[in-house]
Image (tube, rainbow over all chains, first blue to last red; front, side, top):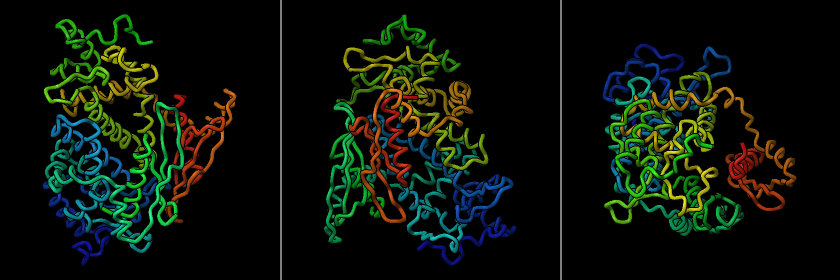
Length: 251
Length: 251
């Protein structure tokens, strides 16, 4: 459970934030980013989940943090890319891509979002949707949106420092790198624990002899559960196993 | 045909660039980026295709433009993300994501790379591989690597301006946006032109009733040709048709 559950999630803003609520948000954001926000509105938008989207002057266009999430995702990806590029000058781009994707995966971002206390700022409508916060990506999405907001408010250099100092510092890079990514073997362990039966099937092959692509399907207790593709049967199975991992929200 | 074909593609550097070759590269880069390069080496690396990768001091680590491509891809993606975010304040993130992917797709980047004259700077080993330049992503890859090099050499603000002024100016955004993306219907037209027979099959369904995923397979003359996935049968077929488009290098 989030730490600050005493306060309702959307008390800050709904229906329209009071002066007190804005002051509280300002303080919380200042605490998170280490500086006074210049444009509070953009942070207010960053913590507005789509279930609490607000009508705009443009008919049919309801605004939530999803656009900021798109922007923040790109900023975060770039800053992490540069960081890894410089930190590992003798690692190839496959390594850099893989480590970055582990850093920015939804699970990790959800965790960081909670660590910096962003989770209790999120405005969402708990009645309207079928949202179960612990199982959604709401926190990580809001974190990306926050990065987008910081970028718009403070510019690139500030945001870069914020990401490296205030977000990346929560990661244990060594353990991320040494993390076992053999999803297939880990999934088999999971199945044994849970008493499930697993089976992989190659359901399709495409392409020429030079560029062949396989599609693997994972069946759990004979039910299709996930598929993955790859340029070898083994990679396709790994990919299916990884997708199953995401669906099962294993770690 | 590239404009500067009189000079062989890899004469600049092989085996090791002469002072004259470096001066020529410096001039060419200055012309492309609109400023004198401060660190020429990083641009030299940006135009070095993997087929011409060089040994480094680190045993087993051969260096080419692939790491710079990883960095440049991230920088380019971010700058385009911000540009679209600001240009289309009332479009949702789905639109922004789609338009960005059309801007940075390999086909587009290959074209821009030729337009700015980067293609004739690329150092690659034409003997070694089975490369057919017109059908590879070599040009677009080098363009991303160039963006990475500019970022390392000149910093964020310069690179942002370079992307917006020197690269994005080659695009016709309106036509990108209005572009027909119904790949399935366009593929059917192609098949009629070429006298091929097309068939789509749903070869797999995964997931629960809430999150169902379909895998569609496209068969050309009864041969599996491409697969795609999506949350509806129609989307899975569209995705398979789009992959076929890429393979066929249609536009």
